[in-house]
Image 1 (cartoon, rainbow, N blue to C red):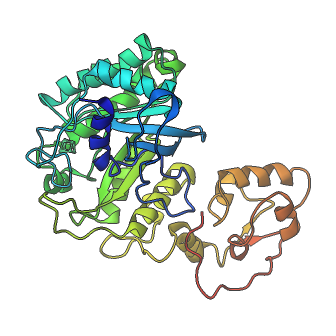
Image 2 (cartoon, rainbow, N blue to C red; image 1 turned 120 degrees about the vertical axis):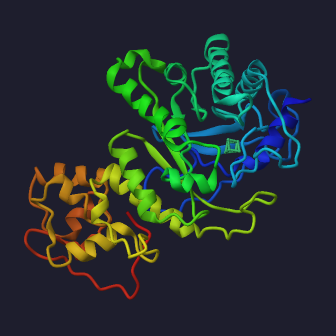
Image 3 (spheres, rainbow, N blue to C red; image 1 turned 180 degrees about the vertical axis):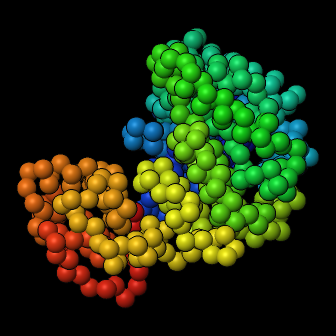
Length: 404
Ligand code: SF4
């Protein structure tokens, strides 16, 4: 069968898997699932395709834009995860690539100038170890036979072995293992054939052990790949506290670069098809909070959970913290430590650095001094002092809840 027909068949369901197309920083609502490009592809011999091949506008970890082909080695699967369109027994046309065929197809598209990077996952056939071997074969062919040096995000299969994780780390820029649920109890309701610790968490732990114990030069391109994971949010009643307890562990102990939150959306002909879709705003608040752990020095216990263990949807978690803690104790911009500046709404890692550098040159006396540095002051004004004075501000009629 034509490889592009296979890609199209697989791509129909791949929008459910977030990857590098979601924002790297808080501030904007994530585009829920960015549609595959869907543009007709005509360059240099590729057939005209009106439907998607699974190419997504994405952002590399270094911030550069790229066109990412998100696809699977096979859309057949022997497991039965309750939320998943690829689950065993679901009736639709499955497609399978051999590793060489996948590598060749991607390289044809890369040479034709329509894709820059590859996100490669797979359904599971004959167990996680055997499936992982095929993914590794495809990656090795890309790197060694076709000398592809661009971006490769490789999925680690449930149950993969430590040596396979190490090998993947010598081939890929990024690895991911989808935990799907925050703990084993919730996973049982989502994916009863997966084991939370042994099959899913362990490979993420191994990846970090390898990064800590072995020299960077052994990794792809002389550095170890970053690791990421994904949670399905809102399918089985888990609380934000459950999700964020695991998220904090992943960021702070295992140094995951990203935790993706995927608001549940029911798929027909699955056991969860009648469950309601999750509110995308919850997904957004979870992203904002995970960035607070990763980049802003916040701890779980500082967050305003309600009795059910959920965060308020109506307000940005950083703003909620600042309203409770900084309104009466504003931060003096000229003296605050960088980590204190980072806690002020509207101040991110870059603007904190800019402020620290600028105040070495002289005292920042008013709002205009900050604005001259390119810093937006609207969100920070209620929570800071400039040379001992509060900048003037008007209490908003409504909280602006989307900012950093
Ligand atoms: S193992 Fe992966 S592909 Fe298979 S049903 Fe579960 S989530 Fe879907």
